[in-house]
Image (cartoon, rainbow, N blue to C red; front, side):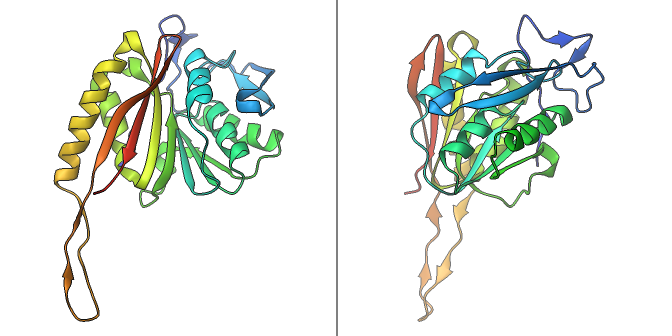
Length: 241
């Protein structure tokens, strides 16, 4: 099941009394435009005060986009908490044969991601509310700047909603600020995914002769992939045995 979540920061948690995670923002939709150039891709984007980091490309996302490794040429990719779309746009431009799904709880954020993709001639992004994402979809790559300040319980629920949906050999990269618990999140994720794996295995099957092929254990490895400017890049790799 998809879960709603919030994204905020200490200095701008509210705008006119409204949280950024409001599903249907009522704050005046004041737009601004600027250019960004992540990973040698140039985008002209439009943002709003009612979505996360509506005035700039935030530092955490910038670190993620600079440190995450080269994407595969094709597959299903997921941007968790898309905001106005910097991660989704970058994934789609780098891998035009891939299908990029961008999800957010904020209707205005979803609309901005969709319009920013069209604005930049990008046709392989599907932006949607978290509740609209097909639960049967599985993903080869996930990138996210997750909402750490929502609180541990909601953050953990969010991550465990999506990370188990990685395909075999699929990988997720998360950016988390060190002083907001990045180093403690790594062992928590490993333990939580180990517990999930204990009750999930790839289905058994039979050969034409009727021999039963045992279920294959599911496994994830969680590690720190990089550090920069006070942020950690956390790698979650599905590496079934």
